[in-house]
Amino acid sequence: MNMMIKAEFVNPFLEAAALVFKDMLSAELLRGKTTIKQTPAPSHEIAIILGVTGKITGKVVYSMNLDTAIKLCLKLMPGTTRESLQTEYTDVLGEIGNMITGNAINIFIKNDKDLDVTVPVVVDTRSAENLEFPDRVTLGLNLYSRFGMIEVNIAIN
Image (cartoon, rainbow, N blue to C red; front, top):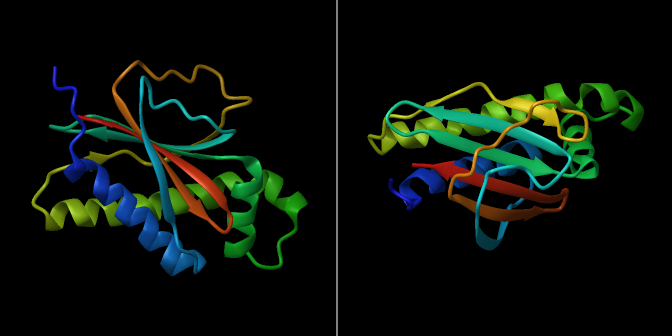
């Protein structure tokens, strides 16, 4: 089994996230430390989970604390109250996940890579049942923005 995670599969997701943050949120994403983990399981309460299928398989998991999630949503939905976002933030984050995914797929296509990605699923890990992340070599990255830190766990090979 190949234990390496190739940059050619990681970078499009990072580029796509940076693009979405710049275009939609007028915010820069700064890259923090990179770690190798045992599993792509999220470390924070809110997670956007993407499945990768086809010749290459795996998971990409973006996670953040609830405060960061709410700040992102308030930026995208000005005039909304924090209270009303308690129920709507999953839809807004799902949209962010869709935009990142779409951009990543376009980057893969430009680089002649065939990659299929599932529709993003947004979960609150504090109440989610049956969240399973099998052990798989995972590249973990912290991305920092003025809204807070977003952890990106990529387990693709």
